[in-house]
Amino acid sequence: MKKLFLNTSKLDELACLKFGLSNEILMENAANALAKEVRKKVKKGVKILGVCGSGNNGADVAVALRMLSGEYECELFLAFEKQNEMLKIQLDRAFKLGVKQVKKIGKYRCVIDGIFGSGLNRNLDKKTVDLISSINEMKAYKIACDIPSGLNELGNSCGAVFKADITITMGARKIGLYSDFAKDFTGKIKLANLGLAGVKFEGETDTFKLQKSDMNLPFRNKANTNKSDFGHVFIVSGELSGAAQIAGKAALAMGAGLVSIVSESKNLITDPILMNAKEISEKMAYGALGMGLGKLDEVKKTELFKTLKSKKALVLDADMCYEKLTIELLKSKKDIVITPHPKEFSSLLELGGFGKFSVQEVQENRFELARAWSKKFPNVLVLKGANTIIAYSGNVYVMPYGSAALSKAGSGDALSGIIISLLAQGYTALDAAISGTIAHALSVRKSKQNNYSITSKDIIKGLKWLRKK
Image 1 (cartoon, rainbow, N blue to C red):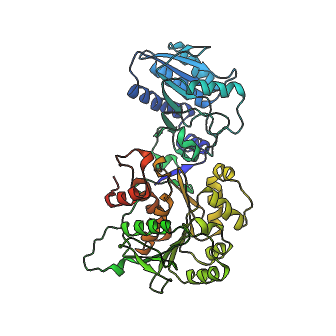
Image 2 (cartoon, rainbow, N blue to C red):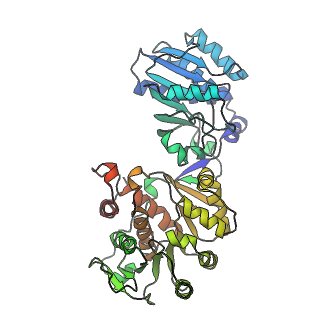
Image 3 (tube, rainbow, N blue to C red):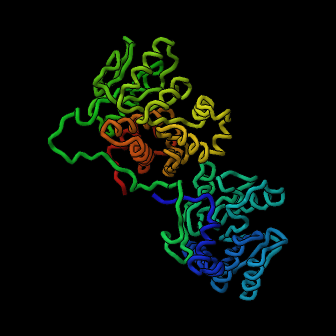
């Protein structure tokens, strides 16, 4: 996993104070990363544009244009009348080396964005919104310097956002690049070295980006085993029994030894690979419920929650996020992974005493709300989204491999089955959440189907062919 930071201004200061690197050295290295990307993707001799704001991001772009001048026809557009001292210095150098300042934006093969950095904390005026919007409409290869202009440090829009093909982020990765909203604007994210190794530049953090290598698959390396060695999972079926069956099949595909669908229905028909049961037995130690559960009468609900307290580990999803008794269960039991989507998390926040939050407010504050939740409850939170967040004990882990292909009914049910399967095979709650969410996302990454056609069946099938690479 890789470290994420809200902003890196303090890391820049430390690099200067502790290691003796000047701001200009850091800037030269940042600009060199931008210039390398241009050389890699854009044919020499064509016209390219740098759009500069008033601060150091604009200065980075000015330096990059200076480096590229002579190889490309470099033009520079100033978004604002005022510039800081560093930008003024770099503009003077760039202009002396042939970079041309333009008052009107024309046609270009490449545009480098240096209007704002991650410290943006205000709504943009109409002139700037129009500028960014007009650039977004251009058919050019678009590079964002550090963070796409218009995103704040939490990855929310300030009115308009530069839509990049690639973001070259400087020194260390920023949290704002990994919000759900930012996913449509960052393009590929690449880290630029500023002249010292990451272990020297970065400090301590409580936020991390997960990598494929963080997925630990439950390969069976021992020959002398039987099905009971891999756990007996129960899935509680409710009003929508199909959801439980999807979760059950995913649990089997991920390695659980036995999976029972628990239902009082006399007409329940399941796949022969799944076992049926009328009630939760003592042997069923690992349970997933909530998906398709619907409403329970109060007597059955009380009995159910009493039974759940005795189980080794649980996954709670969907309808369980609207139950008051869920909060008491979360307080009393550690080995639980709860997997809400934003609307369900909004309900949990209210039940948990955090106050009322709309879905939009949840999305705009995903990182901090998830972190606050994890400090109050001893379990693992999986807040589903385009970039799923896992939170535990104040630490936040971002799983960045989600795709639009997974936005389909049944996808979340499969995730619940995957996670409970790993819990049944001895994973900790945190490890099951990390490996489970990555496995879920990667299961359809190499599918040859159109992304709109993916179903839970494809997710379950894809689990069978997973590899870290």
